[in-house]
Image (tube, helix red, strand yellow):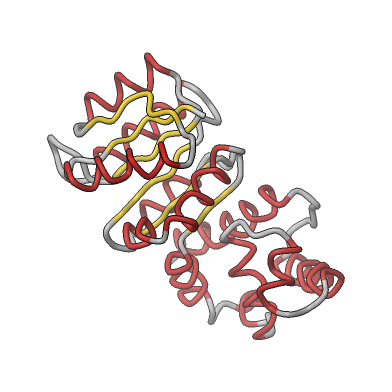
Length: 219
């Protein structure tokens, strides 16, 4: 699996290269600026991009904007964004096209090799990998809305795990319940949020996040 990596800090970039290679990823390019990232994504057509939100020359959201531009040019390009802090606006921008193959992780997660590699693989496969802190903030922000307020504590737990990209089996293991119980909870969640149910894990996650995103735009 070919990866384009963009990170301006040399030590972190070098560490990520070594980590990805240790798990049999091929590093197509490892760059440290927005322009270099844009060129690498356009020319090398990687299987997945791992991108720091903030890159030179602007050090604002250069990395994210380059990744979004690359996804517009190549719809569905898998992109995993890394950020130092939770920035809900960045998460919403990344999810806006609803096509999947996206992830948003805090850089602290990189130090958990298994979690980071799982996120890269999930995104590369067209799934979603959202940092638990991002999901928690999105859910808490909307908790007082009538649809969100209808969810039981257990349904909120299930939805947080769904939004991270977890399968029913993984959710069942995490919560020590049966897959049948998880399926019932997810059905209830979609019913309460007025969203059509789906057996497609990626589609259902994006549907929930899209609902939360629309709620933010009305605040």
